[in-house]
Image (tube, rainbow, N blue to C red; front, top):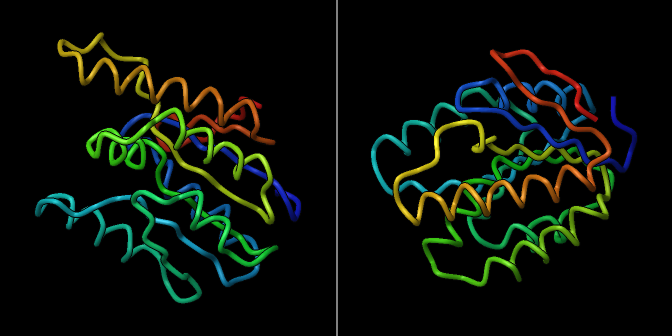
Length: 171
């Protein structure tokens, strides 16, 4: 169980159980819990995914939508409350598609994550274990996500790798 100010980084492949495990960790602590959502509903499938995530969370959750200003959303939160960020790869995608300065945005986010003001749980996708993508945008995403994941893992107090619904402690 994390202490009052800690960063737990939960990473894994698609459908590995990352979000569900992060929710279990957060709800083991006293409510209220803050869920910072980075997804944007551009199509029906994404709307269904968002609805599924929302339906899993019961009373006691406060949802903050932060598809772009994740650092600002984290800075605006009160101290000592459990926070779940889901997820970094969607946040990164949003900035890539908006053609924002990724280096600046990632640096800003890392700065805030390096100073958690409560038990913070951050979810991200592991994207580097598959084949090399066949197009430049997908390769850039894989590379940028891999760099961001490494940087967040380096500052995290705990790193969990989710495999088939099971957490493996990496750090």
